[in-house]
Amino acid sequence: MSFGAATIRIEPLAPRHDRTAFRCGDDSLDRYIREQAGQDVRRGTARIFVAVACDQPERVLGFFTLSAAAVVPSDLPPEMERRLPRHPIPAALVGRLAIDRSVGRRGLGSVLLADAVKKTKFAAATVAMSVIVVDPIDETARAFYAAFGFRSLLGPQRRMFLPIP
Ligand SMILES: CC(C)(COP(=O)(O)OP(=O)(O)OC[C@H]1O[C@@H](n2cnc3c(N)ncnc32)[C@H](O)[C@@H]1OP(=O)(O)O)[C@@H](O)C(=O)NCCC(=O)NCCS
Image 1 (cartoon, rainbow, N blue to C red):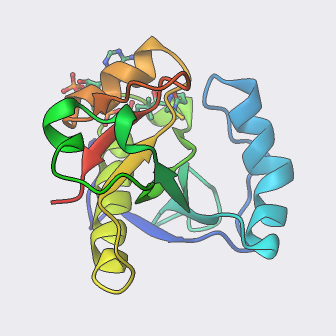
Image 2: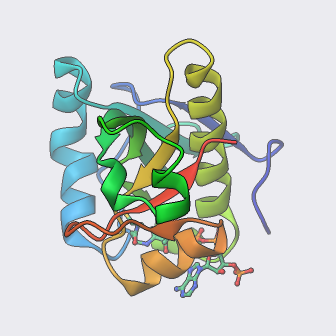
């Protein structure tokens, strides 16, 4: 089974969401959604969206975080840098994105990333942002983001970016 609008819902993280069984294969991301995510929302440092199955709406199957960020123009490819002012460029950061291993390689990661891009485009109509930035944790994550058209930034953080269409 693959995932789509008829099978899953994406909604803001709330106390009713059960995160205890969430395992994505990376301990730091598992700990984050279990222990730290709620605090980030309360402090206003990240908005967090979770995916749940329509027929099991408590169990978290995946999540992503969205925050405001900035990109130094010199980290962008020269053809983009040339067209931009010299000060930091406003951006949206998908700081973390993960799906439960039980539903891996069935398209849920893609559905979450597409939703993050959609939400960012919508927000950018009100608060200007030029790029979406992601923080891949390893080479698998880089391959996942590259499949969506994300390219590497030049800075030391090894982030990737996608111009907001
Ligand atoms: C990376 C992750 C989000 C991918 O989620 P997913 O639901 O399995 O991904 P999808 O099924 O939507 O795959 C979309 C495309 O990404 C690429 N991709 C996904 N997993 C991949 C892997 N393990 N190796 C190489 N490419 C991969 C492929 O191009 C894939 O398309 P295909 O299946 O048609 O070949 C998921 O594996 C995960 O949560 N990993 C642990 C946490 C993590 O790395 N998060 C990202 C950085 S914070």
